[in-house]
Amino acid sequence: MILSIESSCDDSSIAVTSIDTLKLVYHKKISQELQHSVYGGVVPELAARLHVEALPKILEECQEYFPLLKAIAVTNAPGLAVTLTEGVTMAKALSIALKIPLIAVNHLKGHVYSLFIEKEAIFPITVLLVSGGHTQVIEVEDLNHMHVSAKTIDDSFGESFDKVSKMLNLGYPGGPIVQEYALQGNDSAYELPIPLSQSALLAFSYSGLKNAVRMTIEKENELNLAVKQNICASFQKTAVAHIVQKMKKLFKQNPPQHFAIVGGASANICLRTQIKQLCQPYNTTLHLSQLQYCSDNAAMIGRVAVEQYKTGNFTPLNELDVFSRVAL
Ligand code: KG4
Ligand code: ZN
Image (tube, rainbow, N blue to C red; front, side, top):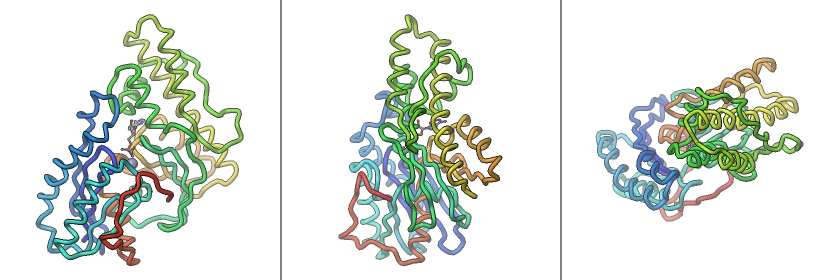
């Protein structure tokens, strides 16, 4: 079994995964959303302090598995350096105490493998990763051959929901809240520009849309409930239309046999529905991670670690470092 630790942002999570059967033997996550919500976004120092409290609490529950562990896996990149350090420090201490090797896992590969928890992987697959930190398309040949074919040139999809929510004083994380408000709103109430719609570039951009929402809010005399709902609905429609427009381009160029949406923002119902419709005429199979594995979690890190364990991809203790930014 492998014990895996995830602390790249605001979720403290630990999992235990069976190497032989891929079974997720133990999985727990403590989210810090509530503590960050008053600030309208993640405060790195606060996040690090909360990991110091939460990770040992979860670890205590896994003690019965310690004698069965063959390796300790940990997310070491990309993410917030101060929070990654908490997970890596714990992993190093466990590795020394239990005399077992360390496996350093790339968080983005983890999101890809969130599709394959307790399952064999399917390759090749084109993966749209939409989270608070990333909006990118990853062409996946296998664990060691992933390349980014399109990415955002500024903000991410999830981040834009967080920022719109903050502008409307609705709380954090913005994705689920904006989606909820949008349900009751009129998505044609405001005409917002679809980013990069005239550009041939296979890329994403959300800062212009965010500014368009800011200007819309400034023009309103009173931000009552109906106005907020209409802004959320119009924004969500445009944010999703941007992704779908670019994915249509990608499908036209090279329709994938397998396509997936992963990451915290892949929980967005509007996005899921429209990508499903896009896949149909191409006979592309759409893969979605289960809702509990969309946002950051240690189960996906453990799933990657099983593959790395099988190929002997370990990291010596003195070489294990954290990297806030890293290529796939
Ligand atoms: O993957 P994740 O948990 O953390 C990162 O690695 O960033 O993703 C969190 C992001 C947040 O920006 C959150 O607002 C967004 O995913 N999100 C959503 C939805 N649920 C979460 N965005 C749009 N619609 C949603 N339903
Ligand atoms: Zn993530």
